[in-house]
Length: 191
Image 1 (tube, rainbow, N blue to C red):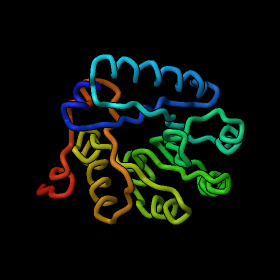
Image 2: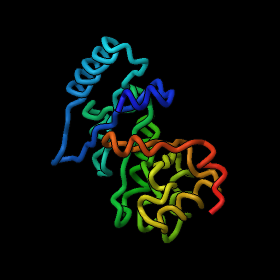
Image 3: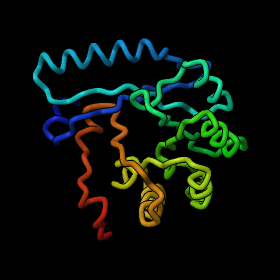
């Protein structure tokens, strides 16, 4: 994946391991150690790519406490935290969660909101989250139609209304990484 990224001119990759409370809880120290190890290998292979640490945190009301206890990796130790909504709904506590994360000095980035069924039905839900201080991240596979027409249409609508702050590959393997998205594809869609 790093070789493919380098061939595409990508210099930095944020590796956002999934964090699901009670299920998949990789300690930040483990992530930092693995990132350091991979970066050494990349240097040895003379690949001009750097891996940065992070988590993609499945929403949970305890996120503010997890942040306070240093159990989560923000994006490269910054104030930005990538969070993931369930695909089939939005927790009732979501607005309070965004507010609590912001009070702790962090900015939540909502990963692939275009794949959430409630946001597909009512994109103004995402607008409200943005008003509260969250950012939104588009997944390239969504805009390409790889998750179906409804997700693609929602991604296009959110993009058209400037609701995204970031675009990510959400690559989990070499196959998904190979489906790159050019700026032209994203901004000049004809269909």
